[in-house]
Picture 1 (tube, rainbow, N blue to C red):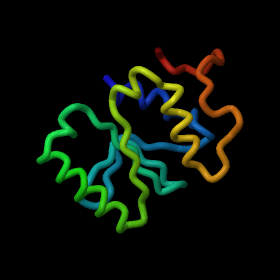
Picture 2: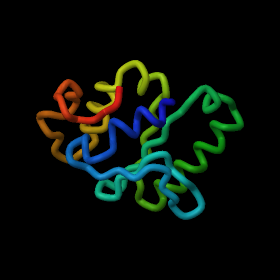
Picture 3: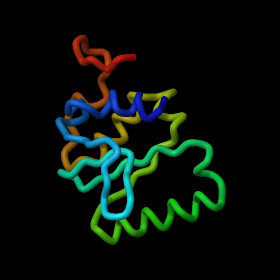
Picture 4: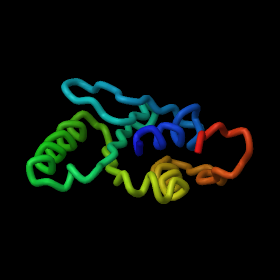
Length: 114
């Protein structure tokens, strides 16, 4: 559910005009969302990601991607569900020049689906 909602936030260049891809393979890993323009991977983390074995796998994945020059940002699923505008602001803040309109979901015709 959180991934679907995040996709509504990111698709069609809704955040700063940036293009995101969903479930993007990068070498031996797949990231939840990827912006090639920023070399930015967004990973959504649910409850399973707090388990020690998963934390270890996530750390290895993040280190591998960073070695490829990709910035990795992990976002809790709960944040996507409870504060979608906060997620947009967080992502827009990662851009070199965040647009002034970043974080606005209230405009009609955005097609965000929620």
